[in-house]
Image 1 (cartoon, helix red, strand yellow):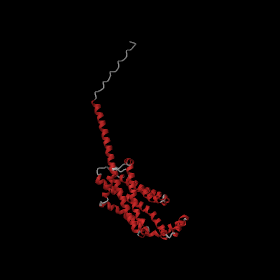
Image 2: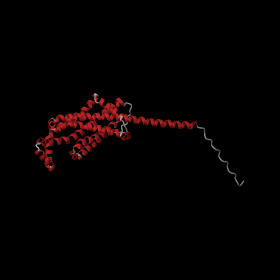
Image 3: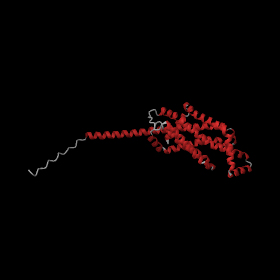
Length: 303
């Protein structure tokens, strides 16, 4: 756990580095521009579609009528926009994570390696061409899992737990893999992820909490919807910072673990070489074993 805390404070300090801030800007600007453009073009159509879908279900229509009978007409009008926001936020978070992994993580890992692990050999167990389709595949899988879990969001505790947990698992898989892609071989990466599974789970839990925090911006209800464009940009900035910080955290922790693994392997190899040399030296100094003379030939009975 000491190594996790050491990597934590180092990642926090690196977040203030000017290059880190610049690399975090690119995913933020791209996702913000795309979100605002899609919201401008399709917000009203999406809200109308969700409202028609909700009112078309007997159970939800009865619930809306019950709310209206209680005098909560404003709440009824907010249901459809809030559902659109709730469905859009996981997509925005996933897209932000994907762009951070593809665009920002490689230079972040290079910065950490250059400043702390300059002597660590780059064995390139995974090429950059494989990183993008892998990240895309895992992101699509995470979105499918989130879509399948939407009915469980009706249970209040699960609505707050499931989306951040799924996104945190996705973040750990992408960021841990990306942190080791340039320096570790495939065998080293599998060994490290297996050996450090407990620490990575703790880190995933902390990342899940950090992912859930920007979602609190939408807790203001109607006021949040009034300032939805501004809140969307603020949330994207926070998500990008979370994933950049997490990427630095994983880079510091896993590169240090990789260095320790190689040091231990080199020590074992050196010890084995010394033992082999000692055996050879003992064999050289040992007196030769006398060879018994060959047996005399047997006498010929015919003579």
